[in-house]
Amino acid sequence: MSRTKTPSFVCELPLVVTPADERALLVRLDCARMVYNACLGEALKRLEKMQASKEYQAARSLPRKAKERAAAFRAADEQYGFREYDLHAYATQFSHSWLGEHLDSNTVQKVATRAFLAAPRFSFKKSGKPRFKGRGWFDSVEGKDNASGIRWRENRVEWKGLELSPLIDPKDEVIAHGLSCPVKLVRLVRRKLNGRNRFYVQLLCQGKPYRKPQHEAGKGTTGLDIGPSTIASVSEKAATLERFCDELKPRRKETRRLQRKLDRSRRATNPDHFNPDGTVKKGVRPWRYSHRYLQTRVRVAEQHRQQAAHRKSLHGRQAHRILAQGEVVKLEKLSYRALQHRFGKSVQFRGPGLFVSHLRRKAESAGAQVIAFDPRPTRLSQICLCGKAVPKPLGQRWHVCACGIGPIQRDLFSAWLARFVEDEQFDAGRAKAAWPGEDERLRAASRAIQPAMGQGNPPNLARGQSRSPAQSGMKVSEAHVIYPGGCERACLSTRTPRLQAGE
Image (cartoon, rainbow, N blue to C red; front, top):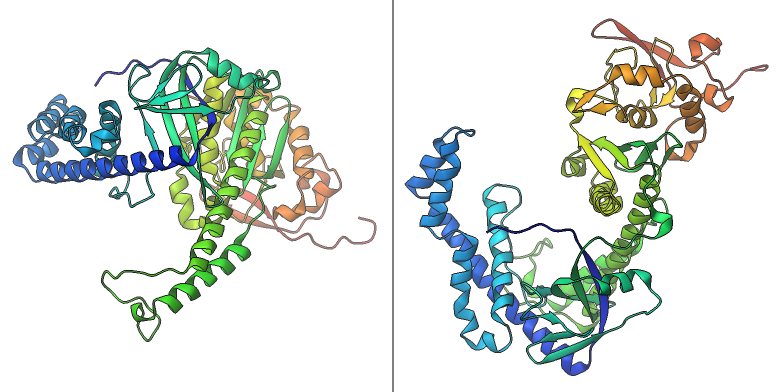
C-alpha cells in the first residue's frame, strides 16, 4: 500500500458532548472494539497458518541479504491472505451487518488496519502478542480521509448523523493556525478524567505546526548524555547537568496505600477466589467489585494520568530548552528497554525514552535534526582526548585521566564529546582543536552540580581548582588503578575527605 508522505501535525480540540451524544459515541466505540477483536483474531489465525507452511519455512532458510528472501515472504503473505487489503476484504462483512448501522466502511477499514499492524510486529518479535480489547478499552476511531465517514465540516465534526461542536479559543494562535490548514483526516479520542468520559477531536492537518517565537531553534551543535535519572547537555553556549524531570514528584506512598485498599476490598467481596495461603485460585471466575472499590480504582487511575500529563509537560519544556541551544542534537542510541531491567523505577518514573520521542518530533517541526549514534564504536564514557579508553564502573562519576584532563563529571564530558561524532565515529582531531578553553567551562559546570544528586563532588572542585590534582599538588583521596593497556587512572572517592588546617 503506497502512501504519500507529506508534512502533517495534529490539532486537538475538546468537544461539547451532550448525554445523548455520549451514549452514541460509547456505542460506536464498543462496535469498533468488536470489529478490532474479530480482525485481530483473523490476522493471528492467518499468521499462524502461514508460519507453519512450507513456503514460509523455505523463505526463512534463505540468506538474510538475498533478494529472493523478501520476494518469498511476499508470496507467502499473498498466498495466505496476510496483507492489509486482505484484512480489509475480511472486514467488509461488518459493514453489511448490524455494526454498519453505527460504523461507516472507512472507519471499519481503519480499524482493520490497526488490527493488522499489530500482527507483523508480533511476528518480527518487536512486541509481545497483541491483546484483545475488553469492554471500555477501545478509546479512539478515525477515518481514512476528510471526504467521507468522520468529517470536519464548518468547524464541527459530522459522522453518520452525529454532529459535535468543539470548544475553540479565538485568541489561541496555535489553534487558529491548525484550523487554517487543510485537514487530511479526523480522529475521535475518548479520555477518562477523574472517572468521567471526555471526548476530543484530533485533526491531522497538512503542513507544519505553529511555532511560538520563543521556541525557535538555535544555531550550533548540542551534545546530550541521557541517563535513567539525569540529563547532561553541552553546547557552544551552555553546559548543564540536571536531574531529569526534577519537578515531577513521586506518589508511590499514596499509590501503594490505595492499591492495598483495593486488595483488601477485592478479598473481602470475593473470599472464595483465594487459597488459604492468600494466593488466587486458578481458573476463570466472575469477580464482584464493591462501589467503593470502583471509586478507589478511579482514584488510582487519576493519579497515574496526572503524573503522566505532568511528565509530558516537563518533557516538552526540556526539549524546547535543548533545541534553543542548537539545531543539531547528537546523543547515543540507547536501549531504554534494557535500562528498565536495572533502573526500572527511575525509567518508569521519568520516561527518558518518551522524552527522546518528543525531542525528535519537536526537532522535525522546528527544522532541526536529532542524530542518534551507536555507542559501541565511540565509547564516549570511556575514552579521553589523549586516545586512551578506560572502562569506568557506574559508581565512578568523574572523568580523571593521567594526561591531566579532569576531574570533570563524566556525563558532562560524554555530552561534550558527543558533539564531535560524525558518521558513527568520534573525530578526535576536531575535539582536540576545540578543547582549549572548554576545560574551564566544563569544570565550572561540574562545580555547579549539587551534592544531593549523588555525584560525589571531589574537594578540589569545591575550591574552584582549574588544574588536575597532580598539577595543583592538592591532597585528594584517590586510588591508582592499572587497567589493560597500561593506562593508570586516579579514581576519586565519592566521599569528600576532611580538610586539614590550612588546606
